[in-house]
Image (cartoon, rainbow, N blue to C red; front, side, top):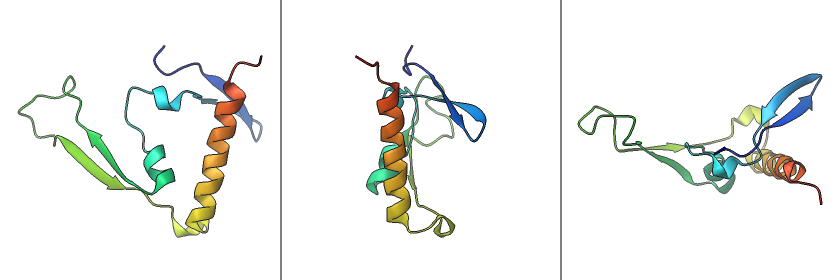
Length: 94
């Protein structure tokens, strides 16, 4: 299973799937770029698109926190803590 194991998380009376192995996801994700203030870059997977097609080889996106959510540094710190907590809770208990 390339993405690790799934965890069912109960939030506000609802369940949602979380994936503790985010860094093992074979696709692209921008979490690291967002948490570290870097530009997010994604390369076109060769096996999905024609080599001579219209899709660019690479795209870049600057990820930002909307001001309506509050100070960016605080939102990013909370997001980091939540992700770390989910990953830690998904680890096998010894």
